[in-house]
Amino acid sequence: MKGPDWLNHTQDPILQQAAHEKILRIQEVEKDIPGALIVHNLVEQTIVYMSEWGRKTLGVTLEEIRMPHQEYHQRYFNMEDIPNYAPKIFALMERNADDEIVTFFQQVRPSPSDPWRWYSSSMKILLRDHDARPLLSLTIALPIDEEHYITPKIERLMQENSFLRQNQQAFASLSKREREVLRLLVLGRNSMEIADDLFISEATVKTHRKNIRSKLNAESTYDLLQFAQAFNLV
Image 1 (cartoon, one colour):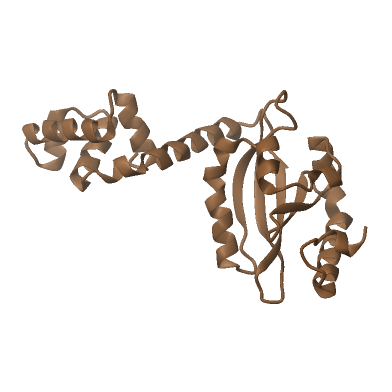
Image 2 (cartoon, rainbow, N blue to C red):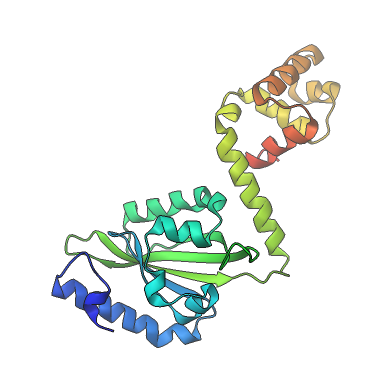
């Protein structure tokens, strides 16, 4: 494949050659990697290259995979996961550090009729332009064994992250004392025990409990537990 095929947005021969050499190196080792290697053009926001393993998994050709990021993600990725890892990717590009790597989990499927499968993905900047701005990135996506014990833990973690994002404002409305009461509540303490632990009156504890439920719109102990877990109170 010719070097110019990799960078449509520029005809700079130096950058074209650099990109070509990077992808040639990837092609040399990709058969030894038990997952997909993906190169993104960060300027055009498109896929530049995907290793043969990745293309076979998705059932696409190299030409078919060169599509805008938005279309690519909508077609193959669980869109509900994106808020969990997109900020990490944006921060990586902004910091623009040489050796920094970000790792995240993604759910991928070749088509809507296929089940989602979890992948552990790691990304780094692969190539910069003449002004040292990120030009290409490299992602390694490794499939997670569906029978591995970590898979349900990943799903719970992603659910907690989603809950956290949706309820940050409500949790932020709690005072320090209310957070202490919330933590003890989900640990199974009653009002009298909480009062003794915090050296406050039982009436004050009951007021805190009422305010906590109101601020968090919590109707059950399970609702309170979700907040405590998501915001690392327990």
